[in-house]
Length: 149
Image (cartoon, rainbow, N blue to C red; front, side):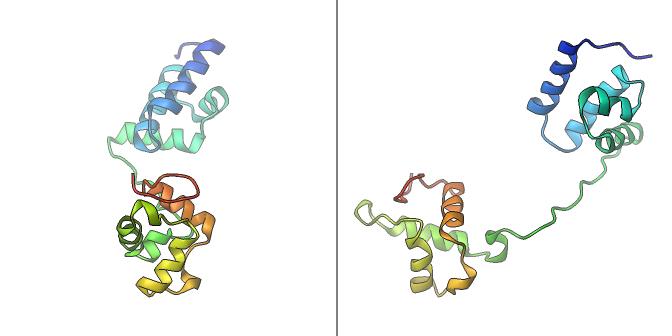
C-alpha cells in the first residue's frame, strides 16, 4: 500500500522528474519508483496524480521488473540539414572562420558564399532564419554579424 501525498509533495515529485532527469530510461525509472511508492503500481493513478504519460510509466515499470532497458523509438520527421548535407557544418565553419573581423558575414551571406565558393545549390540550403539558428547552434555569436567566438 502506498503513501498519500499532499499537493506540495506532488509538486516536488513533478519538479524532480522534470528538472533532474533527462528524458528516457532514467526518467522512466524515477517515475516507476514513485508509482510503486505512491500509486500502488498503477500507471493510471500516476497519470492522474503526477500528470505523466501512463504509457511511459508502464514502460518504466516493465523496465524495472525485467531489469532491461526498452529502446526508445527512433526520431521521426525530417532529417536535419547536417544529416542531409554531411559536409555543410565544416564548410560553414571554414567560410566563417577564414573571414577577419573586418569582413564578418551575415546569416544571409553564408548561403551565398556556400553557393559561390563551395558549389552548393541554392535550393538545397536553408532559409536565412534557419541558417541563423544553425550558426547559433554551432556557437557563433547571435546578432546581425557572424563572427567566431
